[in-house]
Image (tube, rainbow, N blue to C red; front, side):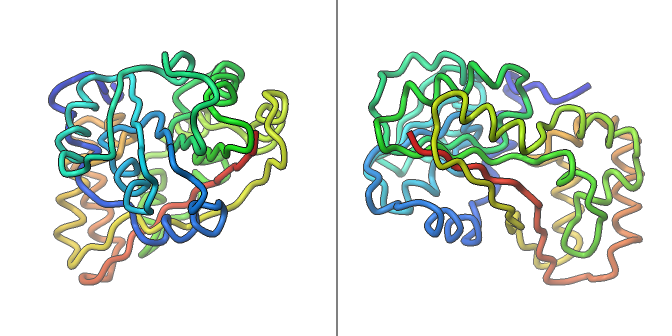
Length: 258
């Protein structure tokens, strides 16, 4: 199956939450955000992190996505922000000007593509000299961490091992990402591990509703409705905490400088 990013039915699936302060603090520690005036968010989806970049004080942020349906949701999500705009394009050929941006963010994007060379070359072209490139995704190792009261995602693979092969096969190993960023011309490339708070739920019912709606979770579109119901029951039984559920996701961040 898989999610259809071009379907209008999914236009708001990546607009249902805010970027957590844990992500914002990490980015501020890693990058000189105060020096950033123009930023790009490629693969912006519903604009969750486009909005977070603007909230950090960046003067102008452009979100790019290949799906007009996703952009429709993003424009609605960010309609109160006068310093955010959105354009349709892809990570290989955005159609934007060269050497114009101080920061380029690609979050949860590179696992959708095999040709990292083209992706990284386009990022290098877009950034000005001294600009920063932030890539955030999961490595295969990030995908197989056991589920617990905070790492809800781990339960997906515990109950449906078939998802493990799907998930790990599409993820890139860290050293490959580092090597290819360097080959594209980026310097001072470094890797950082992050447990990002995805969402805080007042109670278990809110979490199970979120799962049932597959909100912002493309991997759950690999399950049919019956399998999704089985998974939700499994998580309901496995998760003994009923209130104040803090869901965290494991990520790897790579940063390079042009």
